[in-house]
Image (cartoon, rainbow, N blue to C red; front, side, top):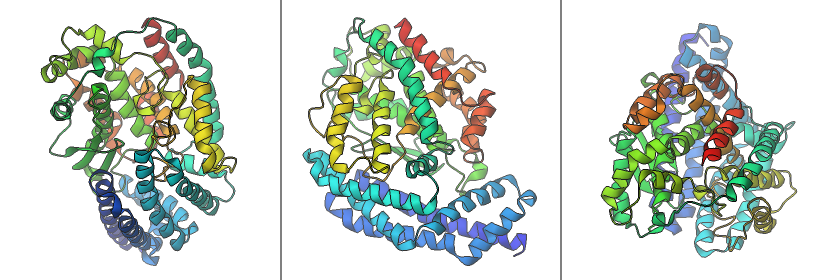
Length: 496
């Protein structure tokens, strides 16, 4: 096939594939935000059908020939097409390895398993979800063996979520965090805890919704291109740079949960909203990886959102919407309250210092599940044991324990470690950012869009044109270095 013809066939295939992805993402968003519980089976069947049609596009003989032709003449291509072809070749190898019928069956399973997770959490009954988790793990192990028969099955899924991640790399990373942070957590836990009772007053949902929209404006999020919905488990879905959909969850007795959910998901949204216009319609028009995405959500949620300067900025907005609840609260008291260190049951409500212990627990359980050392039936007891060992907490029920996260029901095996990597990426990026602009003066005067502009120039605009390693190297002037995360936490919580 001639290069010009190959490029034509290739671009047409990508366009059709993106249309199928668009449909699937919108359906998935609907299933998590609006669909009634009995829609699950029908939804799962349709998702499997769409997924099968998308696979046919990638397995079409002309499309495959086009990909192979373009990869063979990579030096003659523009940068975007070359990177697209490289990514499609990686995906093609994976698709070829997994039979279409197995892939379709897996998509059907995920449609039902997510619904069963929702029901199990609502009813606090892990037994409802247990057989589906066993199936998800079994299918993930099987697909890993087909796609990469020589690799450790968990390594396969870790690398799928974060290119370059492996058990060897993460064992060392978590060992470092455990060695450095556990003594710090112990020391901080012995200190007198700041008053945070005002965060647990009554905050009407309707007023929280109004506050959330103004918070998005404060962050510089374009609400003509980004919406805010509600879900059991907050997340953000990316359709295009003109259609990003955030979700949050409202707790009327804990306003900070929604506030930090909006800031966290807002970090994800800002990344997607600022991908380069030249990537519009391309599969490269998204964040470079799960870890890079988490670096931005955690950067905005914690490094910016839990800073003294942001406390000064956001408190007047909180008082506008909740004047009685925040009467007598000053910025310093608010800052200390939202940085209170206290082991908690829920990962999404964990303080910044203990957060990675929640990830370590999930990492250990996933690794054992994929290695066949743990059955789904054993998860609640092992979860509870590790929470007692790592965080000193007794888990009262599965709703607040092993059923709290949507990830396993959605098939997101190997995703949890990206949260911890994102924390570390974010701290390193923040250190490099401080060399470019006066970050804290910008936060104090509400200049978050100016911070986003610097991150856009150095990271966001590239989408997937660059790998995570290339982005870190380009923005920070060095490779990934976890010590920035350790130093950030020690400096901040040592002072607190």
